Image (cartoon, rainbow, N blue to C red):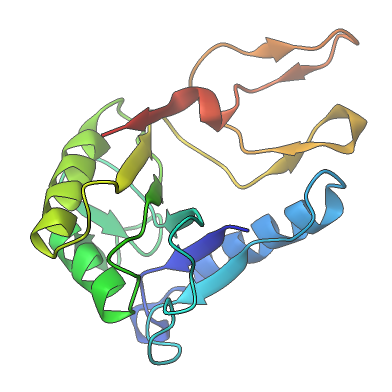
Length: 184
């Protein structure tokens, strides 16, 4: 199972990220290939919100990227900004185990690179907080979406950058975001 983590609390205006998380959960529930939809965990919703997350589960951190290299935001307008070090400290405060192995920074990177610096600094900060060297951090090159239905009832996360995909039946789809994923 995977976890969708919203690092912005309700007081920080996380309604847009909550909406996207609901869309993601509903898409996964509708796709017969997946057995369990991801769990949504929200910073500040309860003490130790990440305590029960297993070290092998993938944690998708939801946020909005943009032109800033050092910040993500709670919405597309940048109403509340968060630095990489604040994100790392929130994961620690919410009790993500120090042995955790996989974090995917799932926010748009529309200009082909600003989020790379954020991801590198985030991973360094996680090491400074004593997360193990086995921690793998991923980010995405391009804009990303929640899973969307494609032919055959399968759902895939999509990106707005990269080559379009044409299926055998002649349907045209955007590239899959997994093709745009990069490891720090």
